[in-house]
Image (tube, rainbow, N blue to C red):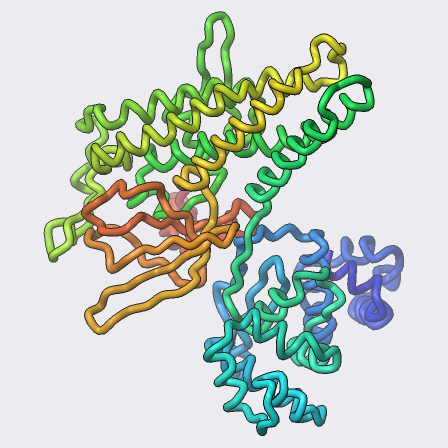
Length: 529
């Protein structure tokens, strides 16, 4: 894909010439870019990419990422597992996200200050910089830039110091091998900060879209007021289609996340890493791959493509299962002795994960409170009568069977209330990014995270139990609902990962090499497994 884009660009003639010169087959360089790439081996493709100037290569990587040609989820950051030494010189470590490719920087705030000062100075704009820094006629310096960054967050700094000057913005983008034109209006600040090396919060639009669609559906209904024509029904139907797509995604995540949270062995199996696909697959194990409802059998799709009817049935089953965890016997889910870590009975912090399902280690009162919150959400969704409204919006419905204004407004109100509860109680797998981390002389730590709506959550550390992982500051996390492990003294965090081909390919890396078995009847080595 990347090489094909390059062949179609101004770099194409040079690449085609290199292909022609490398083979006795003089037709390999002819044809469409896709045809040329198809004839090359993986090694040849890599060698050709290494001949392209860095700035050109980065431009096309950024292009195919920002346009969605290569899909990278908002919370995903791709990093090399090895940085190879070339002739004794270590290559640059790079990272790739939905904002493009960048060089890894240990102190991005120093890099930002230094480059801004140098660009302003090189372009003879020191006086402009001084004015923008303090609104006073003072001398600009690198130290003054650093001082401003000490009192102003990087977002405001970029908007106040960099973006007002097109010349400075372009010069900085050039130094970062970045093409500003690739980024839509409103995302330039985030893109610049990402390129400088900052950990920029990036959120999927799943939950914000649901809120917008709820409001749009409600506004459409209130604007029409009284349904008097097919045009009115078309307008309501159009707004409702997108709303129910978001509603189904919400229900799917509501069920799968909460079942996954309580059903999984996080210490040994999930490693405190959340993947949506893993959560979907856990539902069948906990609740059953099929549910019998009278004469009908409902099947759960582990891939997440569940209809509203299936979701409604499994939502009720999940609520019943969760409510029963506080009184369920734990003997059948005890962790085998061989699976306990060596530090189980040592140190000042007790090991918290003595069972292979998390609910069995959770505090009973906390579980009851958690189940009550989940039941509130289920109750609101039941009163929303989602299936009735959704089915009534179908284009084949007659005027008489189309949902009434009152029933649709009730649906919106109850669905919004259900989502508000799930959102505020963290019953959905929404991502959080670290806003700040503070530690005092006594070793006490305070973390402040923010969600997609900018709402903050404060956690404390270090944890009072053993078995919890160390979470890097720069990765997005999911914070478990409530204090399910009171002895920990803090809420549990899970690293959020995607189901991308990249993440699945490197899952479990590094892998232990398997020993080879030798066939006693021959000299051929046979790999086990």
